[in-house]
Image 1 (tube, rainbow, N blue to C red):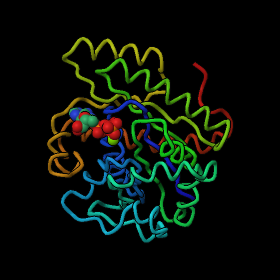
Image 2 (cartoon, rainbow, N blue to C red; image 1 turned 180 degrees about the vertical axis):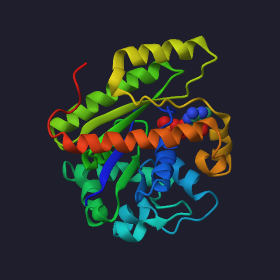
Image 3 (cartoon, helix red, strand yellow; image 1 turned 30 degrees about the vertical axis):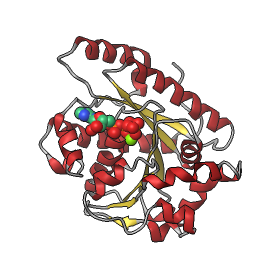
Length: 269
Ligand SMILES: Nc1ncnc2c1ncn2[C@@H]1O[C@H](COP(=O)(O)OP(=O)(O)OP(=O)(O)O)[C@@H](O)[C@H]1O
Ligand SMILES: [Mg+2]
């Protein structure tokens, strides 16, 4: 069976894309899914979280620079059922040359993952906070998109709208099969009225297009990041770790449901 390819994307920075991509990959691996996490952001945050102090044997750099087959660049990790295509900051320097060959390069990632697509259940792609060649390559390769929204920032709501627009653009051009899966509200702080008001506003507008599981603001996330671990490994009993396990269940169910729907990019408001 072909893996489902899921991008975690929002052009707004700091909404929790890397935290969610790495923790969801970890949680789905623990639930028995064979997962490949693709760190497609040269900031390499997912690589740091998953690999910690361990050196990378190869990265996306080798794939782009040396034309290394992706199966050689993928590395096993210490997490159950989880492999990683790592990234490194130098990859950002490839951007100008990638623009030299368009539209062919929009299909770059889609073509590279084809040889390994049957080896996994899920390919989860972490994206950079922009609309650029990297995000287009990722969306062209993806079946669906999860959009994290930061419950403490009104601007991240605009990011949700912008993400929907790019998904629609890509669906009309390079990838008619792409669909919006769901939004996920991150960094909910029940103690602040701003967070409460924003969660209400987001829920009113986006309703069923959001995962019902929301993610609380939790200091364990930053502590885990400091030591190069997912929060699930760092503190499996933290409130957010429980939420990630629930989110993984909801996510896997939503994926199953979308595999049976053939029309409709996403529901009408
Ligand atoms: N639920 C949470 N509770 C506490 N801190 C969080 C939570 N989610 C994310 N963070 C922290 O917020 C910061 C931004 O998160 P993250 O790096 O996942 O966002 P991002 O959207 O990937 O950012 P970028 O756009 O730069 O790639 C990180 O320091 C992370 O540890
Ligand atoms: Mg990130």
